[in-house]
Image 1 (cartoon, rainbow, N blue to C red):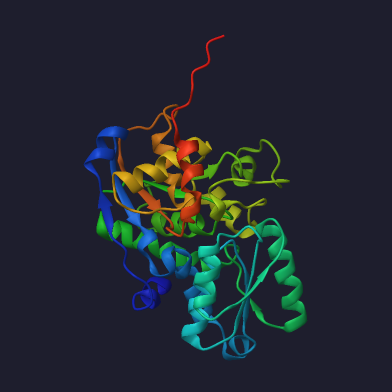
Image 2 (image 1 turned 30 degrees about the vertical axis):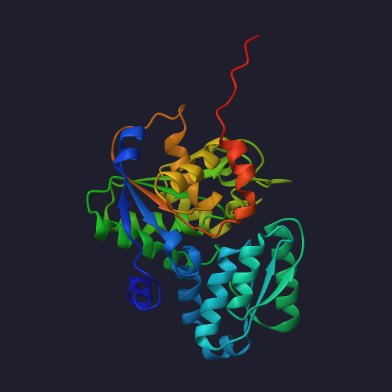
Length: 319
């Protein structure tokens, strides 16, 4: 619980809120962990802050470097700024402008490169070797996972009756930390991971079906558009996660709009995937006290027309 102790004065203890509308709609007792209200607008600041705070002086003096589709970038930038060290962030060229501008606002230097996280990641590693800066991995790092796991500690303090946690999966840092921490505190709790059907690398690896290294992963859930799962994170997922599911873009968009229209809260695609799993009519969920992590709220508002289109009711075609 070292990370929980150290981060209490660094990050927000975000609310855990419920919704009578969604409780009726999903036949669950749903509790939203509002990480979209976290500093920098996403949970990533937890892991980044714990990692940067844990660096030895000689590591910190070299500055830090990271690769990110946006939210980890802001977390690293803020953590580096607080410690007074230089941060350089490599981001995919398609990263939403809002995330780029927010990262720059924390004083980091930005390098846009590649079409995906993996390409930005490779470029960041090359620069790290050249510069000697300390690399802060967005998910495949035990300190980063520990920081993310503080979410589970807070959720179980806020609502001890929770029986299930539904968690988005990109590279797996969030669910690894959450699953480990939750299982230590409440071994019987059920942990469900969710991926976009357009970026199912961890799903494929978990069930040994389909490619585990994707050639593309174009999804409105850009924060979890990761072509390959992490090595360390997958070890945790195999040990502590009960099930992994995939969700269609339609349900991710539907979850985003419902949160905006009915709950008056802005949640990005990656952050809405956990709720999307509950909204999927084909899913069979047993009624439980269910915690849903809304992992981030850094959405590019220009994408709203696309989200409206994807969320529209599916047309029934009669042959």
